[in-house]
Image 1 (cartoon, rainbow, N blue to C red):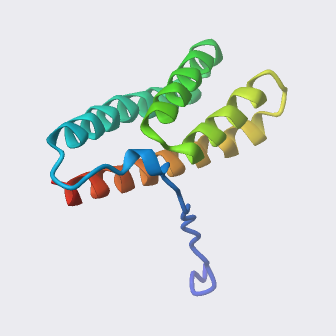
Image 2 (image 1 turned 180 degrees about the vertical axis):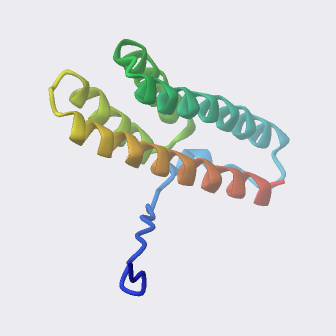
Length: 124
């Protein structure tokens, strides 16, 4: 088998933050808030991934709602949008579309959280 013509795709997502999440430089409270939000959302994203893999769609519905709420509070509109899309697809029978959106949610979530933490570190 010839692997010279194999193309490896590595999807990347652009994300945005709401302006209200960016606060004045030197704010320890803002850093602590961002760090707590990141921790909660990391746990939620891991649970979403595990629920999807286990086929626990009832649990997945609650986790998507929780993630969406956390993302709204943290100023991560892209995560809110993708989580809402996944919630809408839960009721459908289109498991392929749901799988694609869950995979995108994980990518967008990870990128958004990394961006939020980077900005928080710059504000210390």
